[in-house]
Image (cartoon, rainbow, N blue to C red; front, side, top):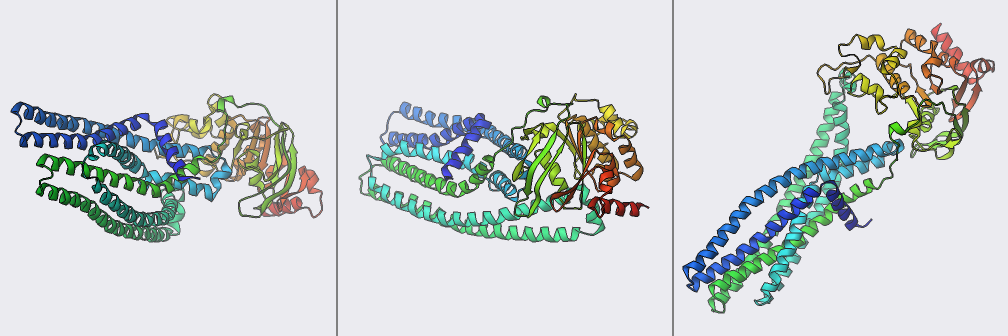
Length: 582
């Protein structure tokens, strides 16, 4: 990947998100570039008129021109700068939103990848951490455009003067670039180190702000470990940034001296010319002003590209993240509802990155409108099958069919699920049930079917009551069993052809579980169902039971058939549980 590509892509995205910000940036740049050139020429003209004793009328016109120009600049520049600052902040928010949207558009398997998480961090770092956004808009673009305009405007004007002054300016520019190279090497090293620290701090920040982890943190005094680790990372980050600050101050000191030396050199050479009377006082100020502006412009141009060279490294992370393949999921209203589908696994194998295979040549089929249960010990691959069946994960080999057609990424709209690690959101109860599928069914009936209607009806706002207090002061917390019922209600309301229940009653008490499975067929509404459960008694309601062992299907059949297998895996597990409950 070539570095200029990342910069050009970044600029293109800026213009696409907010052309107004780009327009104000360009206007402000042109004004800042024109102001010193115009002032230099007007000041030189005024000095020439004064030394030549021109008429008061001509001198007055020049004075009014200087005052009028600077007054206009003084009025226009704050307006442009203020508006540009507002648009810049909005643009930064839009960039962060863009990264978030890209993250949500990735497949579930990609999101789980540590490499993708690193790319996301690198995509945000240029905006949130290293000021690349401000650097590009507030310095790089203004410095490059302004310097080029200044160089172009003054080059033809300095041609008639002491051209040998260009040589020391170019030599000093080379020295300045050498200083910047040392400075930027240090910046890149520290930036890489701090980026790794920031990701770890982000993890700890997520834990400390996650109320669901609050019980364990307090009960086991994990806050001591958290604070110790956070303090260690903060010290590491502060130490690295302090070292960078000291190094930057030293390099900026020498860079400033090089810039000042260039100014002193021009003044010294032209002072000698003035002393020898080879130039008059007007010419002195005109020449020194032009050459100093020219030299400063060359310095700014070289510095801008040198600093941009190291910052493009971070923009490459943003470009790499943007180039990740995303899913094209059809809108919710376009997905098919109400029709049971046939689910088929054909010789499916799958392994998580860097791990041993979880599934090995798994094949089975669930006819449309039928139900099957997956049972087995932890780690046997049951939950992985659930994620594969919804298209969240993609098999390494083999294929998954929905109604005899290969499952594509739109499997998220043909299936519904209640996972054991389900997530509810700080929305209203109604919004948690309807999600993007508003109008797909009846919320009241769905809450009744899942045993939540009594709880919801007792609430002042009913189904319009907010969960949690993150955004609403009267938000409520549900019990574990109630929360799982709400997740089940969400899955049923979607009215998808395939329903996957991954430990759907793990938080239920025995009575609630019995009530749910007494009318299991009504609960799944004649859809195709895949049930994953450790409680084997609940699996008796299914048309077929698949027993997973070592990533393969070891046994399959009805409850009665499997119980007839002497020394069978299912029989062994069922009897062990029955003995436990007895």
